[in-house]
Length: 330
Ligand SMILES: C[S@@+](CC[C@H](N)C(=O)[O-])C[C@H]1O[C@@H](n2cnc3c(N)ncnc32)[C@H](O)[C@@H]1O
Image 1 (cartoon, protein in one colour):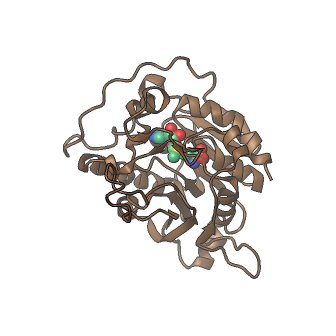
Image 2: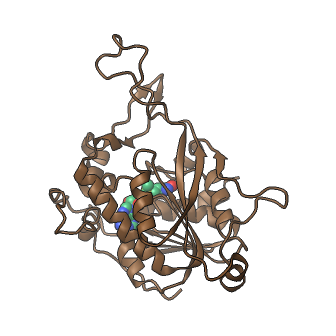
C-alpha cells in the first residue's frame, strides 16, 4: 500500500483527543500540557507476518491514505475519546483518579482499571460526536465499496458513535453483540449500600456492542463481490452464517501477560470477527486504534494482511512484542 509512515512527534501525540472538535462549537477547555514522554520511540513502523503497525495519529495517517485501498476495518477506538487524552493517561499510569477507575480488589480479585463513562460531560459528548464524524468521513474515503467497518462501542455511548458514523455516509448494518459479563453496573447506591441493599443503580452489563457498518455498495451485492471482493460476511461454515451474537470471555491470563493494555480484547473473539469481515478471504484489514496490536495478531493468525495505527509510543512498543506472541496462542 502506498502510504508513507507518518511519525508524529511525541509532543503532539498527546494532544489529539479533543483536537478533532471544531473551535466554533463550544469546545471543552484545553487540558493542562502533559509532561514529555521519557524516551523517544526507536522506530515508527513495525512489520510482522502480514501485519504492519505504524506509530502515528490515525487521523493524519488516514488523510494520507490512498482512497479505496482498505477492504475492512475492525477497531476498538477510545469509547469516550477522553480516556486516552494525555492527562487521563497520566492519571492511569501514575496518580490514579480521573476517568479511569483505579484497580480495586473485589472478592479477592483485582479489578482492571476501566474508564468511567458516567463522568463524561455534555462537552465531552459533543467532542465525541465530532471525533467520530471526522473519523467516519476519513474511513469512508479510504475503504472500497461494500467494505465492512466494525467498531467496538459501549452501551452508554454507542448511540452517539453510531449517529456520527452514519452521518458520514456509512450504512449501519446492526451490531455484533459480544456476550461478556463485565464488572460494570449492578452496584448498590454508593454510600447507601445498606439502606438500599435491594437496589442496583444500573443493570449489570453482560454485553458489548460492536457497531457494524458497510460502505455503500457499487451495484448489487454480487457485482460488488466480483469487483471489489467485499459486500458481505464470510460464513463460519457452509452450514452456519456468521452470527451477530458471539459468546466471549475477558482476555485470558496468558494474553494479558503478553499484552498488558487496559483495553485488551481477546484473540478468540477478534479472530472470529476478523475472519468474517473479508467475505472472500482476501484484502487488507485496518485497525486505526491498534492498542496492543490484538487485531493485527488475529489477522496474522488467520492469514490476512493487516495494517494498524497506534499513537502512544508505549502501546506501540507493547504491540511490537505482543503481535508475534498473541498470534501464536491457540
Ligand atoms: C481501546 S484501545 C484499543 C485496545 C486494543 N483493542 C487492544 O486489544 O489492545 C484504543 C487505542 O487507541 C489509541 N489511540 C487513541 N487515539 C488515537 C489516534 N488518534 N491515533 C492512533 N491511536 C489512537 C490509544 O492509545 C489506545 O491504545
